[in-house]
Length: 273
Image (cartoon, rainbow, N blue to C red; front, side, top):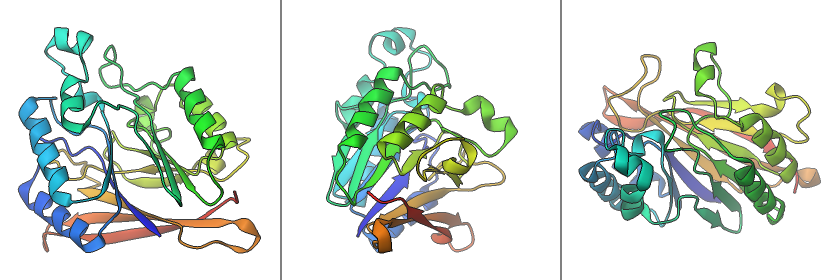
């Protein structure tokens, strides 16, 4: 069984040292095989912030890393850099691939860069990206948990967050569902939840969930949600008839104990291969 740690929106430059230390301890405790950074790694895309983020990631000693940029990881005030080389600092810290892929025996993770230099906060998924991801999902092996990662959410739970929904997400949800996607991971709004997309979007042919993460270590928390991360366990056991299982755990930072604790567990019943 593979364990994946999702860290989103750490906003290095606003990080909280006690939470950083607690997350290191949690990673050592859980020993995940995969780390996903789902964007807004820095607060203002500064070199020192990317360096601090990279040093923190290295200190976790997790074997496989997938990192995508968020809107905060593109220079905001340096207009020339934003237009001509918006991802240069991200790529120096986390590699040239902006849409990394991980293919393991029980797990397929496909990352999508939903930021655009010409958009301040809004995210966008293009038809070409939707097609590329769908074709790779269709080539997945039986038994793999199929995950797509975006920065902006594909669905939200509150009316005030609708403005943050990823542009093009309706088409993406429909196409990726037909192609076999199980989970779409996101961040951006600093609000963790697990949402059954098959109950929200009419006509989806299979069960599929939106899995949102809160802000992992930043002081930029919502009043209703503090620092948190997601732990996803795949290959948790096949079911009669070819069905599969996975679990999504939400781990919250507790201010009194200065440690992360498991707040909730969503055991998901997935469709068969």
